[in-house]
Length: 293
Image (cartoon, rainbow, N blue to C red):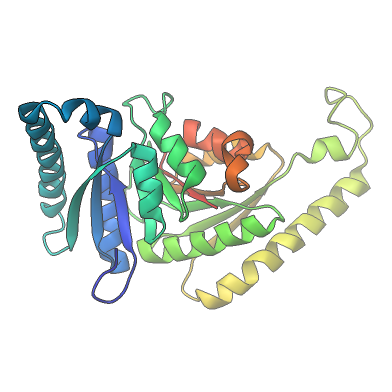
């Protein structure tokens, strides 16, 4: 899955739904700006085609429907990106497994939420975000509307190695989309200075609070600085908030075009210990979410 310039392709899952078409349009826009090809993947679950294999007309009809789904998606994408290299492909296999396999050589995998109501996230999108070998965009229509300058890309960071990888991805994505980048560190400081478990009535250590805030800002500056040197044209806004990361990033997603977060998954156990913040965001954010492993 590479272009003539040896760029990894952007892969998008197609199932005939409106959210899949929205995901395809987002993926096409990114691929065009990144100089990549776009691969449209329609998976045909094995359970279906095994049962249909004994009935040739039914099998042919299923193949025809698959071709129709891919053709409709390609037509929609070409209406806005006529020169983009597009590769439609139908694969017999489970949806999540097919997209995870494709992620091995992809720049990004993009999947729709699977439902018009973004709070009823499709199971396939969750599984792909858990298991993919490249970053995954879980797409939903953003609430915010662009009225002038591009909406920001928002990235939540902490002090983990994975957060550094997510930050690198966020800088690259923001540069590709020509968008400003909002780097956010959120930490519930109250619990560390005598407020957390006492309903706001504990003794506040103001000196400790000031020290912790200063240290966190210094760490954020140190984390961002190497990437700011590399991406010299980046417009970076740093935000430090005393709020839970899940709530804070969800709030910011209402004014963003994309939220970037690390998965905090660990190998084969990622399904059971998928990071609480990323898990919350892919269910509740008000814009597309990019999950970085």
